[in-house]
Image (cartoon, rainbow, N blue to C red; front, side):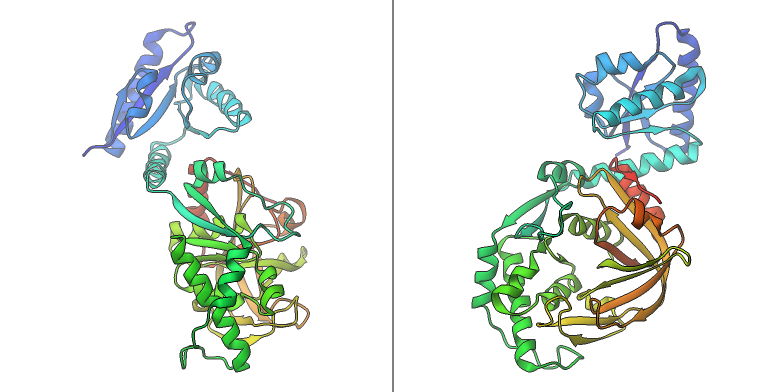
Length: 403
């Protein structure tokens, strides 16, 4: 079935109708030839009846038409198609500013036919994804006390990422951890560790698996330090094993980090290493990241150690391969994102840091972390994927944060 895109034109009454009409017909014909999509002129009330809604801004002086007629009766998203003549681009930029002030999703579609066609493709894909059933991600206990900027609005998580945040009480988590026991499969791990400690860590992994199945989750974030206090064992191994089998498992109750990892898995089908900066070198543009857990399939090899902060339990010292990586983070209010490419220069190991440690050289200035950072934890994935992730987040209406 052919894709049908709705087009609602607006222009100032001071502009000659024939002029904007001919220009609009030319643009829509060229886009039809380029994309194969059918562009249908519609009334405002019919914008949402088609595969994608566009507002064709034909001239300057359209701003109040948008403010008085469109905004009160149409909830968006507001995709503003414009060709640039008759001050149409200027009007579109003013309208976009108004849209952003109202915290609504919007974008100006302007430029070459290739660029506009690529954005239409990306928006259609994002719309199709948003029409899938809600994705269930668990919040097992609230964010850790030190994550003072990591609360996420469940309403916005639904609206922007099509995610349903499922709250699971700390009592249920600890209760399941305390009652669960399943022997560690022989030969399951390549690293040796105290057998009793390894069994306790594996018990947590099994309990998390039960909770995921009980609540039908595609991922979760765990207030893991409370688990350490309750059972004298860290959840690092459990989180590693969940991530390894495509169940997003985020540390410390960090909801933005969980959503970031989930979006990466959705777009790229890749696992991510959640880590926090340990050392920043602005002169060399290098940054050291570390954490005590990672998906085991991201490690060339690994050994078990204690969990860093508590000095007990089981942490994972993973050896990550050198080469290209991408560093990613979505903001807690789900309005901004950071994505930058770089390279892992080396693994490190210092006893005063979390156990998996990597030094990354970034392509852009590391001063983002000192001036504009979207929080503590960031997600690190193998390969250079800035283009795909940037297009995806922008299709959802998020703005890129740079240094």
